[in-house]
Amino acid sequence: MNLTLEQLTKQFGRKRAVDNMDVTLSPGVYGLLGANGAGKTTLMRMICGVLNPTEGKILMDGQDICECRNNYYRLLGYLPQDFGYYPDFTAGEFMYYIAALKGLNDKMAKNMTEELLDVVSLSDVADKKIRTFSGGMKQRLGIAQAVLNNPEILVLDEPTAGLDPKERVRFRNLIADFSKDKIVILSTHIVSDVEYIADTILMMKGGRLLLRGSVEEVTDSMRDKVWKYVVGREDIDRINERFCVANLHHLDDGNVEVRIISDRQPFADAAFAEPTLEDLYLYHFQNQ
Ligand SMILES: Nc1ncnc2c1ncn2[C@@H]1O[C@H](COP(=O)(O)OP(=O)(O)OP(=O)(O)O)[C@@H](O)[C@H]1O
Ligand SMILES: [Mg+2]
Image 1 (cartoon, rainbow, N blue to C red):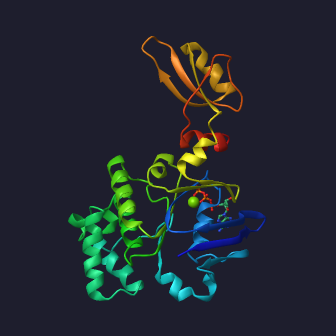
Image 2 (cartoon, protein in one colour):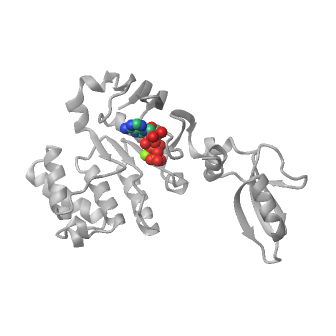
Image 3 (cartoon, protein in one colour):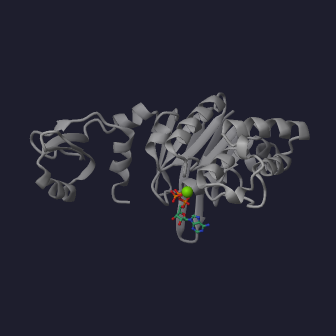
């Protein structure tokens, strides 16, 4: 299955939230990165059919999704960024409810609910009301409901927001297990969340697609832009003012190794450092 975005554009008044995006997605995990307001949520809402494009279209295997909506929705799983929960539902009731909306029969709904609540470690609280859940628990329930119908296209808008480090690891494993032969698109600000699981990074800025490639490919574009340099503690404020500093590492001798992102060599004896995806993100979004 392929999903093709053709000149996809969304205009809100004078604001062009998504600006002429052309991209084809085949099965794989896509990490959608971008600063606040880059257009990630708007793009995902169009992909999920909850928002109509102002211009352009979305094709599934060559067919406009507007012309095959019912079929398309059946293949889709979606975790919206601001997911509305029903506080008086229990986790189990909520899953059944979503299962009914997605057209699963009773047996399937029961089996999938049990299985998925277990996967997201909510089996013990299946009978507790959602109003008693922490942010991370609600988020895990949101992930579980998104995959209830075993979707071919899974769209997760900031799925790891509110998850603790252990839950993040579980989430990654869940996606890795789930994603075979499927299109999974997940947005985040947290670079490390996509670094390990995304086959392809899509970086958006100002509604446009800035970069596309594997983690290695896109970080490689930073190869001559990341530097390390050792300074005294007293110099740090000055360096912070002049450069984009990605990291400070305090050394045993009292000095500090600074990691600087810069097109040009910041100091005569600054050395190249191995670039990371986070460096790339900082390079493009340091002023946002
Ligand atoms: N319904 C709307 N009406 C008007 N403007 C909107 C609407 N939705 C989004 N925008 C604007 O479109 C731009 C893109 O917003 P969007 O929510 O898609 O960004 P985002 O990348 O998801 O940001 P974040 O990381 O904060 O979630 C922003 O400038 C936002 O203010
Ligand atoms: Mg968003």
